[in-house]
Image (cartoon, rainbow, N blue to C red; front, side):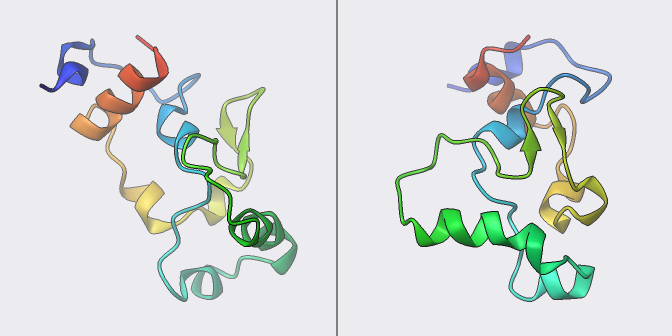
Length: 101
């Protein structure tokens, strides 16, 4: 059953970040970081989380600023983040999982 479809439609991603709350690292495709010119120092926390080999599926993205609920490096975000559609089923399910209206 798709509980997320019962959520109201939203007009903006502001104050949400539900999609980032269960994506522990930016979902880069192989080679995408280089193509986007992501500086090594921004990739270090990503590599550290992967290297820790922890069960981190419920952790927020290392690039998410928890206070502002915004991506710290929005201009360098992966294509998967750019393509994520507001009010899509995945968006609405993410909001439902996070308890957001």
